[in-house]
Image 1 (tube, chains in turn purple, green):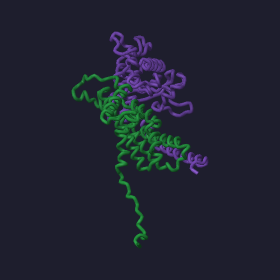
Image 2 (cartoon, rainbow over the protein chains, first blue to last red; image 1 turned 180 degrees about the vertical axis):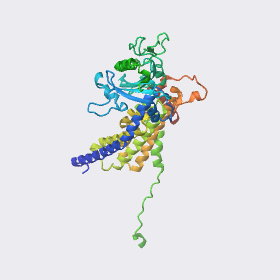
Image 3 (tube, rainbow over the protein chains, first blue to last red; image 1 turned 120 degrees about the horizontal axis):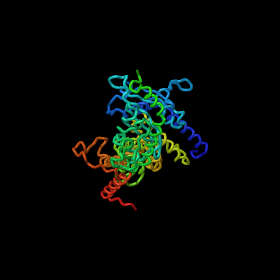
Length: 253
Length: 222
């Protein structure tokens, strides 16, 4: 009886229903907690591009206090509503999903860091980045000083770069190399910052627009370079707008 | 004469103690003499991949123990119901469901760690240790014994990857569980070994562990 086709089919069907039900129950039950964990992680990443977070810091309250967010399009205009009329929240814009659209159709969130004492002063602009590494996607945030050219901090993450090689883009030390570099020349033309090939390059090569590379991870470095250059280009019209308006330091007034 | 025809009370075998000698072997054999990684050489890929640091390794170890134990328990309870012709796919479905559950729980409560081990947790499904124990043990033994066997195999896997991770993090990053050990004892400039961070380092450490173990137990491959 245990070997008959009917028994096998019935057994498999029951097993499938039980396991399927169990998994959907778990997915529904844990969904809200997972969503919260992802939101917290996004905020932590945004903040850690500009502030050194310690263990035990209340990320959410710091975030709510210091960060003001908006969404712009490729032309640098602020977008507040979706095509269907719903509100757009910068934190909920899925950069990975936007990345699959054509650049001119994407939404570009901007996170501004307010001064701790005077909230009308903006201390930094944090821009999300997304691109391709060697094995999988890479992403991150770049923080610009209010002069809109000096890099205040960078934060990178990856889906599947090689541990010890490309995955080093998540190391604080590697990210710190971008600090103080410049993305535009004196006339305001975009140059972007490039990671060099190889590590321990001559300090002569490490000018305002170049940082030391990661040995054995040239393709990941190139991915970072392309990602930075592309996204800085996409944000260019917005950055030009705010610097032309002279509202750089007082956007929220 | 009459005594011979008297009914004798039915002799029942005394219940086996919960941890009899035979059962203890299920628990202790995989720890050393029959270790899944160093002797059976199973589950090597995840042993290389997740062991760069102790914290993700620890989570991975717990995940494998949980999956191995519960998979053994479920399969062993169902062993008389599972049709022989589809037993592998039944085992696979149950292991996969358990792994997805573990993965979901990690994503909800240990998001940082799950970002690191997420890929490998999914690959527990293909971890030969688990399917191997199901097919070799759980299909033919009672649930309690199967649980002990699952725990034994799980811990046998766990202690090896934790040992590998200990040396890899110590020499590769100079830290243990992220705590900078060498800085704490005043050796600020202790050179870290980049090789230990890469999977190659795991091969080397694992090789040493196997060497030491076989030197002690005298195990020889035939």
